[in-house]
Image (cartoon, rainbow, N blue to C red; front, side, top):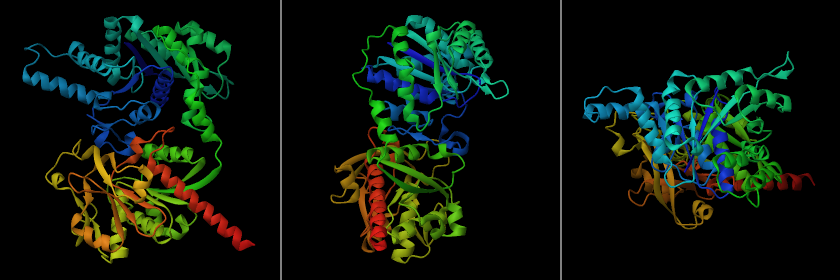
Length: 542
């Protein structure tokens, strides 16, 4: 069993998560089984109650864990399914330690950071590594942060326990380029490594984020001052087009070969580079379409990270470049749908919470439905579509969700029964993977090509089955239902080229080399829409 710890210095947002995911992908290509986990130093138990503007999207796993968005990168780049044991926060650690102290598990001893907190961390490392060849652990934050000190101390102890031959420390730093100096500056990297050494950890590999190539002179300088072999100074330039270029880029730098050599692993080079094929398809599309994403967290695109990536995956599947136009739902309320939505090949409404912008989203759903534009609704996007249909097709003009109007006379979307008495906000929603049975012949069934599926959820409100019969008579299609509870999971609209809205989050199960069926089908429908429109325009001009 081998262990890799990834730390970062100088600044945050260096891309540790993507680097960890890329390394995992490269090692898998060489026949090794890998697992990746994230340690987050913040005191929140999980990111479930954090604003998207604070921490980006909340990524949900099959077991219902609300986790850091980096776990999305891990699952998209590698083959393994992750669980709540793959994301550990300081909040979880201290919660566990305090519970044990209250139970008397420590037999009256004084409870301290060392050894009790560090032991909790090490236990998680041992547990996560079971059953795989290589465990990659990313440490969130920046070396030297006070919140991260228990994690780095646990890493140091762990290396001593399992033997340094079984552990590799990879440290990421920034090589800034000062325009006035006209060169890359290595001092921040030196200082970052010095801080790591103070803790008792000597990095084996340095991955240097940079906007320009690293010269041999710079490599030699970093090697000398940081006591890292020159070949272990890895260049990681900003990617030109897509994050999916990164595995291939790091492979050319020899990162996977270096890791295998340091850890003494038996892993022959792969016969082909799967990631090179993904990038080739991504960069050489035959078509181009424009999708409008109607949301409210548009100032931070990480809020919709998995949705954005899933759209890209759908494009790869269809040899199609997808241009995403981000449209603030509140702008639709003031400017109207015609101005903002008429030039789109497809419209997508993602998940979200709260009533801000909901009327704009309802307008977007109606515009797509009445103008035969492919529409894809995710979670809230499905609830929005139901409200639109109830108001504008069924004639229930005051229809709404009780989330937005608790006193609506027609609550076509209502809070789930088991949610009504819940006061706590954290980890209390309907979370994780739930089964769904599809109606044969539906758009959803044709996309999945099977009758039974499992998808991940994160919501409190649901389709109100008291209105099911009325809505179906008016032309709403219920194409997916939970077999155990009768919960409506997927809706469609009769006589529409592609109008699909789902209560779950399909974006959490899409990969660049295996696009989610619904995203692939949505992009395909938007492409058909584009081609038909072009043909009509061509015909009318003759």
